[in-house]
Image (cartoon, rainbow, N blue to C red; front, side, top):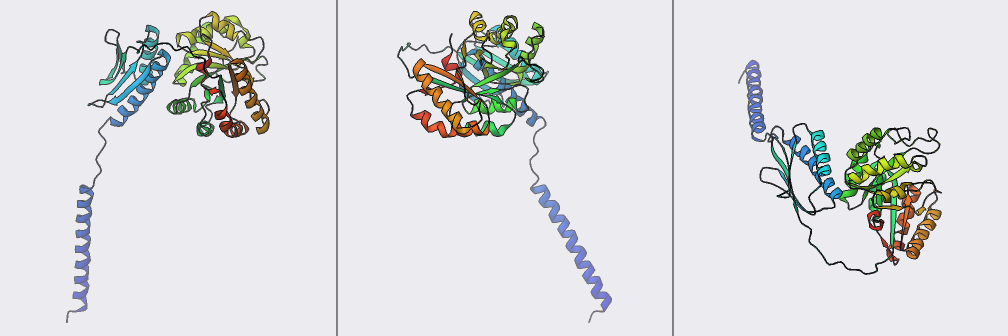
Length: 364
């Protein structure tokens, strides 16, 4: 029989052999199932392409063109097609500035004769092609009365934006540019088919006791400062097609200051909704004088944050729309307002009125 020492030696050899075999097997498995590494720069390129797409879609909205096709090319570049007029020089200049903000290496080439905009960096990244709109015969028929509901003060959080989208009514999103989630809310709203406005912060009459925000437009600001701040709003809120004032009971009474803002809006292809926070607002009048499409708010729906009272105001807005052909209501993302809209959704669908985005009731 083997001695005790021999047994110990055999056991040690067995354990050692097992460990060596296990290490060899693990090494083989690791090599066989090693994940494929992402090519250097691939994630960065995808992120840049997504940013480029957002900006190109925003240009389409401001130009009045319609996106008809999006696809990825053979080398990963973005190819987009749109129907409408080729953007004017000022829109292209703004797009070039936005591209360089995404990356210093991005270059824009506009080719009006061919109807193409090309974006390049290290190689071709995106091409946007325009084709003429199809002319359709104008049909003059009296449609249903139109009702607009704009929800102000969005952008602070994603929860209220998602709750509003879940109600499935075409409520227009008015987003504060200085909020933490302004860009995310604007992108989400656009992708879910909602119209986006810049909720332009302006000086109230009792400023600074009431603060419209750290980046608001004040009467004391020069024209250059107003323009600089407004360009910042455009950068932070993609897909905006118009704007309405946040507070502004002092600012909207100043013709010179409003003319500066409205001039910037016209250059960007936006329309203006006068929230009418003061009866002496000159916003609508100055917008029309500048040739800017505009409309005035009729009803604030939630001055009192009570579900039943807000529901009454929604019905009053519907009745006003039926009586005068259209009506515009403004509300805020209070829990009571969201609940009132949920309760009113079936009622609104049953009415002989169309609930539409703000752009459908503009005076041009």
